[in-house]
Image (tube, rainbow, N blue to C red; front, top):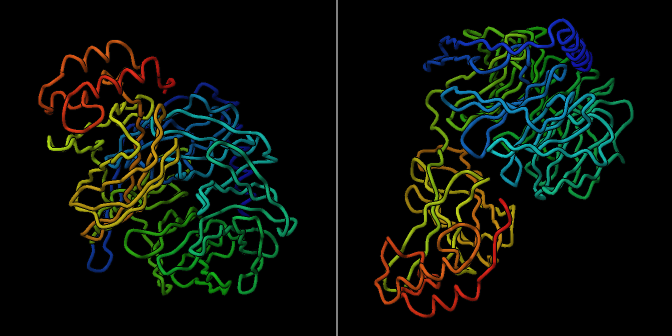
Length: 520
């Protein structure tokens, strides 16, 4: 069966289930485990079903900026949903803001610190969900069903549409579609950011292809070396600097260099196993799902395949490298679940703990303002800019990371790594605004990779009581500290951060009277 046929069958079966039992809301409340031997390493599979609504069919999964896993529930017959599961297996489902009958499909972390997903079939929409679960949908200029999504090197999200269209959406939701250079009568599925700064995608059809599109929208297709009618499905960038893809009909794994040279691998893959999603693992290998064989498999960069089936009781579908250094996957069939393979011998990804806004107040010393982690209730920083320092703390020493600003007027400067802390120096920070700064690609001294974090802060000079408006109450608070030493109890009143509490602080606060932050 072709993958496109499987998709249509799934949708029709979901619709039939809705007709028979439209009020189904049951959850299966258990987790299972299984162990198997992999050479000298012991691997363990755990399955989680508690909190996942029956028959919702989890599809694709990715790691979020909050240290959790996020997945789509693609049964659009009753409702669409996005799920979140912690590394400990605690599930939360989000349905508010997702328009019926959209069926969430591909999901990926965006450069703005949110999760972006496609709504396939009758949805014809894109969705964005914050780590707090707030959903925004976008439908303008989307021609047909969005499928997979990926963050591009240009700061935008890119997605495939079920027809011969590649879409690009900005963090603000502005969509541009590209069709030139894409062959007719193909089905676009997987998409990923390549090591060359371009976007790569799969094309299913009689002549199987891999496509490449530049940030400017120029498409190149590659078919040489790919078995005809093999139906490439998902694609990811490997640790070797190449692109790796699954062949659903061909029962193979493919590798394509940035120059377009293809190698196919079939040895070690069970016949008719239907390779589906693929991800770069925490161990320097590629991991992929085998829906029909009830297995998750691993392929090394040299093409050696190992399959794992013990403990997997439902068809694996989506797959991702988790924040805990393990491999996580969705189980698509009616007994919906999320699975985890413990990859031993691999350091876990750094896990974000907390963040502060740090300023040096002259001779009085350095004082930290703890920052809240709820994006819809951000902490207000009342001390003067335009330079600010945000300190992210992880659970172990950090060696590298990349920072980006996705909201507000500010630029991320040099990063400083001190033990468990990553200090992000923000420059040209405007007053009276919210700024979202994120860390991605966080790596630790023990070899852990894939850590991330995101923080939203309000900047409003003089708002020392942090109620998002500067008023006489703030002036009274500053005046009450005049001539006192700057301490950990009153440092916010030193709004000019010069280390002394003087009339200068009152003048600066008074100049901001009546200024306010918008509702967060």
